[in-house]
Image (cartoon, rainbow, N blue to C red; front, side, top):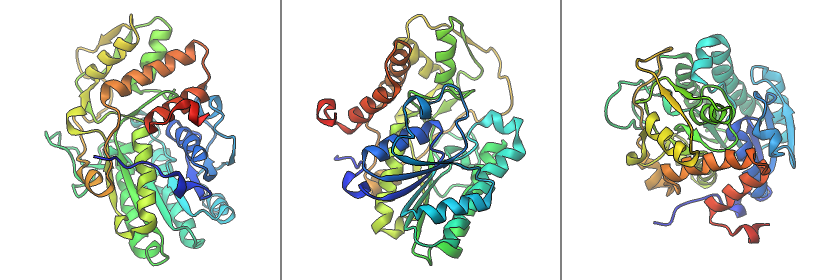
Length: 360
């Protein structure tokens, strides 16, 4: 099957508003959009970690960078008004489950009201044709049942992060049906699984935690080794967001919720991912908890992505072993002196099937 991918002819010259461009996924997407020739305006808080990919990879080069809190409705509206985006890609969020337990009010405010502020700015300043709002695979009420969740399954969430993202889905559907459809704006939501890839330094994420521990000569402490997640390399969902936006440009019937993730047989336990990571990082030590510790997190989670496969022509290009291996090699190469930007562009070229010499 010929797999769909981002089309440079579509993105070249497009005015794109990207929220969350200082985060892990956002920085990767900013680099990709610039590579595709888009005119990118970024709206986000300052980078949340040191180090961070946004600064290391020079992702600010060639984009209009705005440090704005999504909770500030008027500041968000000003950026929308001034940038006049044709396409909006909304990635900004408080995206950590455990941080949601520590800061529940801030999590709800950023994720729900931040999204509402952006959507209302698009309502108040018409002209945008396509918007993709990214939520999460955790928007579904998790019954721990042994089959993947489909787009029409019940929404819910035990923890503040998951529940706030489920609420975002309701806000997105409401603004689409009540306002934005009439303005000619095709609005979709994207529900993606656990992403891995070089350049993530957030706390409480599996492979970044492994890299920190193993670089320091410490054993990695694992709380839930048998937890199952739909792991995928960061470039897979980012490509899906771009392909979805391309589709929405000419097909408003695609304005709905979409699942993006690995193929069903590729979902894996934390233990499996760590075993793959240790293959790429020999000598890494691990301590597995003998009992479940910490606040509630889902134990089993998988997405049914058949809709994206059949309607958008999307399927992962890299399997789990390739994704984990590339992630760990990225961090090792950076540690040994390679440049983050060059590492990212090399992965982009490899994913796209581009000869690096031709792309230089």
